[in-house]
Length: 308
Ligand SMILES: Cc1cc2nc3c(=O)[nH]c(=O)nc-3n(C[C@H](O)[C@H](O)[C@H](O)COP(=O)(O)OP(=O)(O)OC[C@H]3O[C@@H](n4cnc5c(N)ncnc54)[C@H](O)[C@@H]3O)c2cc1C
Image (cartoon, rainbow, N blue to C red; front, side, top):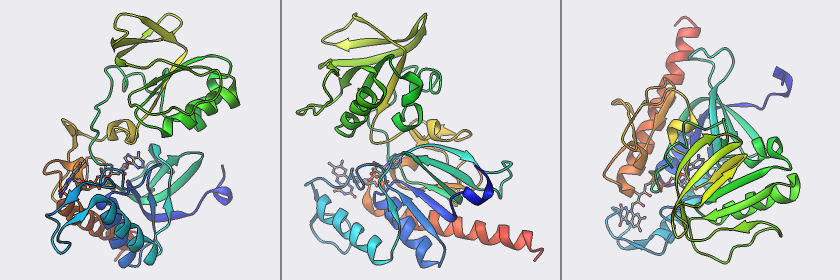
């Protein structure tokens, strides 16, 4: 891709549209900077249930659904562009200099931004043993990016929610892949004809073996060998360390400094992904702190370039 076909570069890309990401995007916009909110397939998912929220100041007793609707209204009122695709990878743009910014891959689109705020929530399921080691070497999160590499071959598709059904069906229909679907949730699965479903089995470990990747199963099918050419994993969130190289974590949380900058300069984090307490008010507050820190960094970079 040459410079003329490159997508425009936003000042800030926010990943995740829960309370932290929505707050970050609104605050970047309020500072007159350009922003894109990469929201995942189900925006606001962790708050958008019917559960009662009684401790978010100013709202009295509300529900997750009402709060999610309020966030959605606020985002559209200030005209934040929202992309309902999950980010699967972030890399440095250009020559990788601190001021070059980042490229974010989401579905079949790419987005560019000078700075990034990660607001991806906390990964409740945890990743599978071996998953991160095999990423790009037999494990993938993205059918659009990697589906064609496995055309006509065998794939185990591990899915933590219904959005995986479309992706697995796409592998079977568009690429003629022999798909074994391992749902980690219960529903009426809507899958393309020919997709085999293995219910009640928990993936415990992924390992490279001759001829592909072996999935060690627990639960109802413990001990049954399952080998495929590749394993695709679909969950709401991707572990941040799998998204971007150089991020340090402390358990499931990203390490951040006082300005909520991660260990990758130019990348900030807010909300549950930075640690406990897992609370809406803290997420909204950190979204603002991260947004203002990102804007301040951009201003400092511009001043240095201009020799101010
Ligand atoms: C049942 C329940 C009850 C709760 N009750 C309360 C309460 O009463 N009071 C309270 O204060 N808090 C409560 N919480 C906690 C509160 O919901 C969280 O603390 C809050 O939602 C955290 O906001 P967040 O933006 O950090 O993360 P989240 O709300 O988890 O949002 C993160 C978003 O990022 C998206 N995402 C992740 N990875 C990617 C990616 N790679 N690309 C794009 N998008 C991505 C996810 O899909 C998700 O939509 C409750 C939570 C639950 C589950």
